[in-house]
Amino acid sequence: MVESKFLPLDGATSVSQAMRQINPDVVAAYPITPQTAVVQNFSQYVADGIVNTEFIPVESEHAAMSACVGASAAGGRVMTATAANGLALMWEMLYIAAGMRLPIVLTVVNRALSSPLNIHCDHSDAMGARDSGWIQIYAETGQEAYDNTIQAIRIAEHPDLLLPVMSCQDGFITGHGVERVGILPDSDIKDFVGEYKPRYALLNIDEPVTFGAWDFTDYYFEHKRQQSEVINNSLPIIESVFKEYEKLSGRPQPVLDMWGMDDAEYAIIVLSSTAGTSRAVARRWREKGVKVGVVKPRLYRPFPEQYLLEAIKNCKAVAVLDRAISFGAPLSQGPLFTDTTAALYNAGISGLPVVNYIFGLGGRDILPDHIGSVFSDLQKIASDGQRGTMVRYLGLRE
Amino acid sequence: MKEYKAPRLDRPWTEVNPGGIVLEPGVSVTYVTGTWRTMQPVRDHAQCTQCLICWIMCPDGAIPIVDGKVSGFDLVHCKGCGICAAECPVNIKKPHSETGEMGKAIQMVPEPAESDA
Image 1: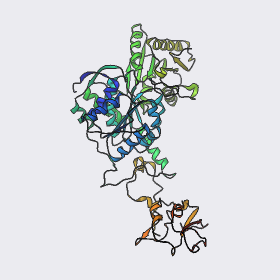
Image 2 (image 1 turned 90 degrees about the vertical axis):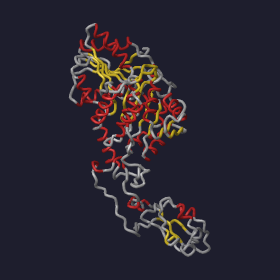
Image 3 (image 1 turned 135 degrees about the vertical axis):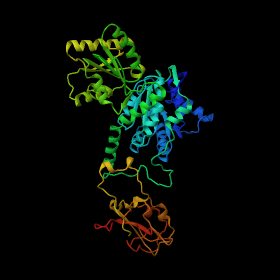
Image 4 (image 1 turned 180 degrees about the vertical axis):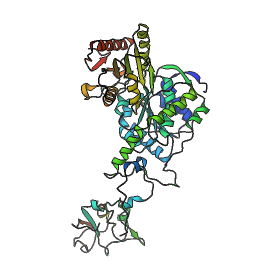
């Protein structure tokens, strides 16, 4: 284990510190709104000659991801950053990056999608990209955002994966919130990420290859099936990177961050920063003698189905908190709930009542009392033996 | 016309290259696109000035050059887009050898029912 140096950093700056240490070959990014301080800081490192990166300030996020696709196919280690509508504008190219199996790392500061116009935290942006073929990691804190960004490089570039990775954190809450962040020494990060040796590269003129070729009715289906197999089987590889980084940093890197789940009767499943609020409330409830627990999946894609089932199967009632709506899904539930309930059904578990809470859209505060009300609801559901309303709302004026 | 070996169409998904990458250079010649044609270009050889503009403009490299001269059309790959006929700058003085019409040295005619491609 290597000692970290602790600095007061906001989540965005933590990520730019990680990018400085990774020193990628190419960063292509759109430099203004909805961009965050991630790219602002990083462009300063480029201007100051602290990194060797070729920085391409493009005219849109669509162009940013297009340039990343080109640079990655050329054989470079490539990163970019975006948020909110910027991610939405990348949509077409996200699928192309994943379909071409290009190990691009994209750091996302999760923010609401317009309309109505809003720039604050929710997960609508990244959740919309959940089927794009990217691995998705969600960070609770600026520290995790830093750690995840570094690990994302190793995951993406693993020769058995070659998949792009989206490393997400909560807009403003951690993106702009200053906290104590441990930064590992530059040399250790340099060694950890190592040199990128692409399996195929357009600039390798000794072995000429074609990327992004025409793939008609005769082979497209086979390529997509292969892509699904790779992400389906990516979890053990991702875990091996997590373990290696855990050893280096001394900070635990689980697939599911769990609190009180050994004997929890009532559990909350939630991504990112709200896990911290939930844990704080759960501690108070434990002091009152109620067996509550919190599960925070760090990985959302691939969906850690088996781990999640194992974690919640002995609970009496479970709440899934979603910071996004899947419009038009049954009762317009959230995506995390959809995946969790699908996993339960597929495992033949039908007796466990699970409810969905939509919260925090457009940066609406999620307060300890809201989390407390969820635990109260779960107790009531378990004692009544009736699930009641499937999709509920926290912090909404009703 | 040169014989091209068509790509294998029997590989299962476990054996395809990751991301649809193509490992051998120049394999697009094995992809037969001549069957897409509904119109076919025809050239009046005698009235052609060999300016090579059709060769420059052809988006599919389907106008082979032999000894610096246009020799005909690669109908295995020509999609019949008609760019060569549109771009041909030669206003012929006599009726076209293939169509009997006045106009350009390259003209488009409907694809014959039984195509060579």
